[in-house]
Image (tube, helix red, strand yellow):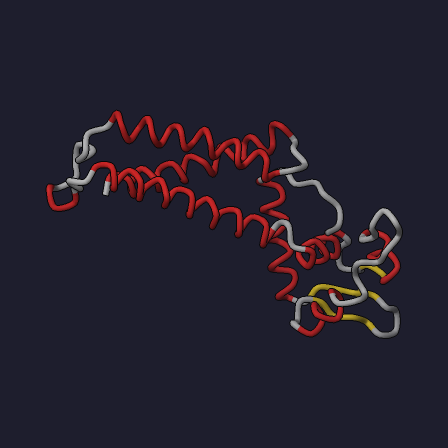
Length: 181
């Protein structure tokens, strides 16, 4: 049980470290930063696991593992699994192309963005348009955006606005300043 408790404590320590480091260092490649922080947190896990008593000073005997190596190893594996869950959530919300579209439309205000404006924001270096093939029709189909047929403007629905606000909040926390998918 000690390994699991320390694993959760290390993840809780990792989150504010990742937020502050993202803001302080103004990184463009968050995965590199996150893996470096994970290595530091992993070292902290091992040192803390070895330094603290098996019962952590408060666990009852029924929750103390008599297989210390197994307890430590399972806690360490859980730390990496929790880190994977963090990465999945981070990139699923912050890094997704559709989330970037919602974010840009949200930033434009109630007037929305034209098709041309969106296409310009989401072009690759060679000028390829990453939007029209699949993303915009799918966001309309799933109810995140609406298109005004007369003006070719895209606006957020209530569902899309909620997701865009959540994305904006997470972008601010992790100091993400990227433009486009």
